[in-house]
Length: 583
Image 1: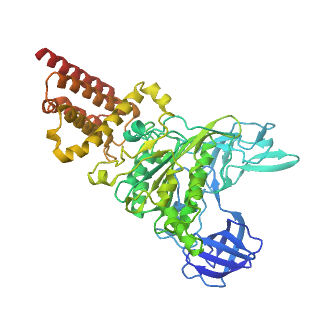
Image 2: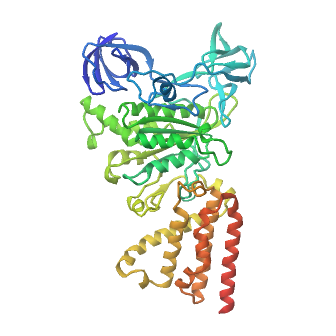
Image 3: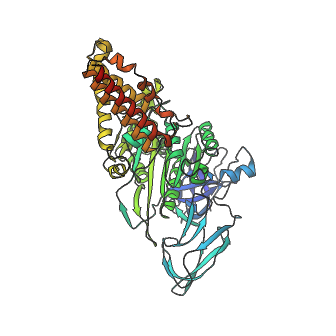
């Protein structure tokens, strides 16, 4: 038991703390405010408080728990809403209503819920850490695979089917004469990555339903991506679209310093939306961590690591997980505030010198891995982090350090947002190093994906090169070939890349539909080139009825697109044939 010696905002120094350990959880003052030891000097402990320190006095008690900040892992996580320290906001709302009290406590997993456990091993079987010993139907979309905690091994002495709470014993494990109890729940330190058997390169497309991502700048399962953008460019909506429609087994949304009204909108919408493939409610495959901007600053760092720890836990079951963090810039701001109060030597723009390594410790927990234990299985964690550079200045430290880590960049452009082009992802500044990785996946669905994608990107690049000339002389002074190029690239931008997050049909576009949409536009370009060679003007080509029909492709339901594409292609062939006959 120690005492407060100094208080400076979220920074607390306590003395008489000899015997404590770094990153140990402590309870501070009469209300038991949660804090975490981040440094030790003789018998003094440097503590970062994860809650507001208003009213604390020198001399108040500081009690160590002997435990490292850990996440509770077990059935009951999916569909839940947590704060940055994995306290259940739903449970606290039931107890306290709309306003949470300082020092409030709430368990992450419900202790009274009975889960139906079905063993997949029997008494006498030898097991070790990571082995799956049974299953629990957590939701209609997630089968919770109960694993032997890492670091444990032995012979199953007893295991029974039935209904259990997370704290009740489901099996007895005997190792060297010692009998240990196995439960549905286990704990894991949030800052310690969970081990695995072998790491593999990211593979397969993470289907997001966003055409510019799936088709132009694909993200692979197990990959790392950054979405930087200035104020008003649509970062939050883009991240919400990712976590809504990504066709992974489980999605985790971390609102790190997010505005409260935007977080409330996310939580409300996910209780109404349905998964496009299964028809089940999205909340049955989502976990939410709500650490809003009015919550304690220091808890932002914890929220990020709690989220990725839960992602690794489900990855070890053999699932593909997407973790979205919005935004890592606000997490970095919390580190800067603590660094200033600790009087550390500041780095660029006041951020701590360890900013890069701390970002790496988060992003590098993504990956496709072969999991420990039996049966053999693969799982993945894909991480997408938003970055909020002040004034849309991508040269600031958080963005630059992030770009050194990730392999996919989705750059949000203020000028596109001002034109109401959403998602405002710049096709000139964005890139993905996973294009070759997902080419095998695309070849099975769309054998011409590589050529069509490159042709579309090439046309957009040519349009950018023409922009300076257009500004000087105007579009009407251009040759007919360049006019046609501008017409087609406008169709690519407005009819393919532009996508409404709030349209009933256009909000989610299957990869097969995206491929047919761009192929139709490229086929139109080929048709128009032939007609141009035959003497038609671009003005005449622009007035063809098929141009309007192409612009409405985004309104066509996913399952009706093959028939509509066939119809449009037939109409274009007919137009070319008729033109040749007339000539």
